Amino acid sequence: MIARKNLSILIRIFSYSILALTLVFLINNVLTVWFDWPGVKKLFSHYQFFGFKKLNKPLEGLAINLSYLQLIFYFISLVAVIFFVFKSLKQSLQKDSEILTNITAYIVRSSFWAVLIVGVADLLISFMVVEKLVEPIFGEQLKINLVIPAFRITYIHFPLILISFVIGYFTRSVGFIWLAVLVVGSEFLIVISRFIFQYEQAFQGDLVRFWYAALYLFASAYALIHEGHVRVDVLYTGFSERKKAWTNAIGSLILGIPLCLIVIFLGMGGKASIINGPVISFEITQQGSNGLYLLYLMAVYLAVFAVSMLTQFTSYFMSSSHKLLKN
Image (cartoon, rainbow, N blue to C red; front, side, top):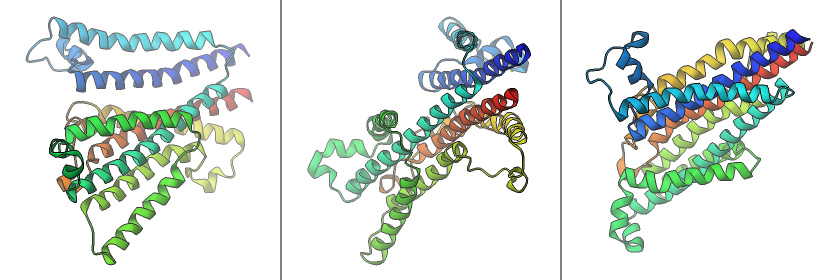
């Protein structure tokens, strides 16, 4: 009994540590990419730790202090995890799993609201710009600003994304089904406008691709929450509950969690990485002002996918471990 209790504590520390370290990595990524903090990698390069090449220009003054602070964030997160676990010793792994599942659901729910609201808003703006309706209604200066990616994304997209996460907190329904309907509806409107009204613009196709990509990447975590993923079901269906728990625990630990970490760490490994690069450059569609200014968000999809799946895989691991320790 004592051995199981100790193992449960170790599993909780391990699981929460993964999420805490990932959270700190995301925070440090924002500080490095957007606020020009040096980052932990430069600190390691400064001292040539772990095989990192020596910097051409060594860190000094404020820069080295900031890099140390970013490193300290990781240690603080581990201390916080240990403190939390020992402060809540009576909390079961199943309860921890439920908490993480709720967090995953919130991330997915809010992300669906974001792609819905931002997509509709950007569609309206692009329509007004293409049809030259902005200047008569709002003036020439706003017309100029709205075709500048940095302005539209910073002052329209970002506030709408924040609002979406507020809406996601107060709503409990995931917009998965509605987004699927919207994808079909938007494609249907393209057909109607093209073949009946002979009207088609680049932003119409961009919206379909934007929502379609969101539908599949965000729905991955949604499907995982509701046991919708295939795990060689010809075998898995016949497993006992204990074998299913072993399958989910090992699969989450060896396959699921490492894959998500690879996407996060490589995708945000630097300013030119596959996720950071499009975001900091405010990458937009090749059609310019005739299309939507949402291409950068499709890179963010990868981060949302990886974070939500990581959280849910960790939840799976804790839930499965609870079932194994209980028997």
